[in-house]
Image (cartoon, rainbow over all chains, first blue to last red; front, side, top):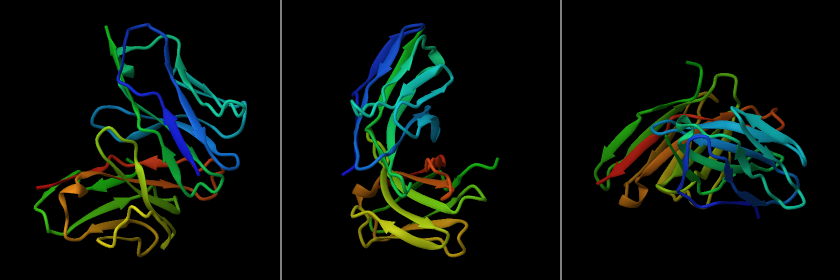
Length: 112
Length: 115
């Protein structure tokens, strides 16, 4: 079956620190992979995506590379800001796009 | 605002009452999804529609839950005889079936509290 496992939080970092949030997946076939972000009081927003192996998704300084050999899609940012404080969800969809499978979310707090 | 909208944003009800939520997807999107999210968890898939057809339902969706999308546009999710365990955030998302990546766009959610 399909599933996503992501690093448990909460994560607290100082501003300008390096961020990594680990995500691994189990899937049949070749899924698409996503990172969604949920800011306090708001709905989920797509942060970045990758649709095939070795693709790198990037947005707002965040990056993640689709690694088929390690079944991973780790989220990274070189220098976090207070405004990055949110909950981050790793997700996958199968090729039909019929269902999304989400990880449990990782809460990030960035302190000045 | 042309995003996904949901109504109401918050609902407080007493156990045993029925509730209905509405979702308006992005207008050109033909797929519509319902999810449930509890505190500290990721969204869990409940059901999805392509146009007006309900194509898949999760085993999480008990017979007290019913969803409709009568004209292939907005959708409603009804919960009958609510229980305290139904308290959660109910999320709606929409997408284009033709989109190869299956990217979904989420609404702000309806937070249900069952007393």
